[in-house]
Length: 377
Ligand code: P1T
Image (tube, rainbow, N blue to C red; front, side):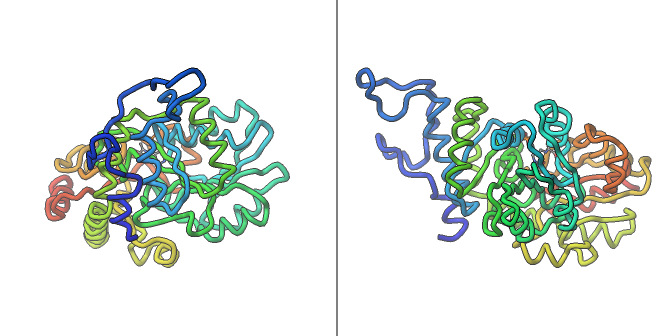
């Protein structure tokens, strides 16, 4: 089936009791058992919930995977990944990831004996060179938040296979509409469903998708054992949103292309970063492994003063953390999403104080462009 057909139908069967076309929100914490030792197969809602199962199947289908494992947030999913490794193990990871991922792993999981090498994964040699005897996982985010750096996914899966490592890709920025890491041989895909999958800035959620039985079994176990599950209502909101993912992503991209083009030609910014721009250093790789360039644009305005002028005077764009909703958002990564990353690390990757990140929404593009023009007047 095509993407939109899967998005609208996968995992969603009419309710067996009433025939309700839309998957109900199963608000129950527990299930009646027929007799001692004999249940319907549903016993307790941390373990089983039909609304959650529908969402897991739906996103697994969109990611061309076999299993979806839902979590209460993207970071809960990121945390659950660490159940695949143990103290003494080493993980090679993109140096530019969401700031919260850095905070969780480098500032917290290190206390449990895990070791992380943060490398520029745009160059596969850096990944290979960082592999040690105790390396167990390669974790990449592509394109990265907020620098929009790309990592060659086919190259990563080859290295992982050769060295017997688990490969993980955070696919939040592209959504399954524009990129399917499993198709490039990656073992596990991570999503913050808070973003494009949720799409309306009204829910927090996370998802892991895999085809691998062993990883699925372990992650399913930890989903129940640690209990970081999303509520049935939150699952229902995301399930409702994936139905329109394709139409939203097309519009996000159309607007982002026009927005990046405008910014680039306007001369307002010193550097405009968008994988769809010909001068993006990895434009060729973007065309190879993605089916589009997404809705995120970053721009360096040269000075904090000018960046502030943009951030404080936009009227259609809202100054806020997060991304991927229908409404346009703008943020200052250095002091907001990536404040946990030390300044020298930020500087190394070009995440300067004058960098502004735009999550281009699906409003009328003229209004978004005019918004920047009036902000800088
Ligand atoms: O916020 P949460 O649902 O826990 O997801 C964490 C996360 C994981 N991966 C990526 C690539 C992300 O961008 C995020 C969350 N990011 C933001 C809140 C942000 O404004 O960038």
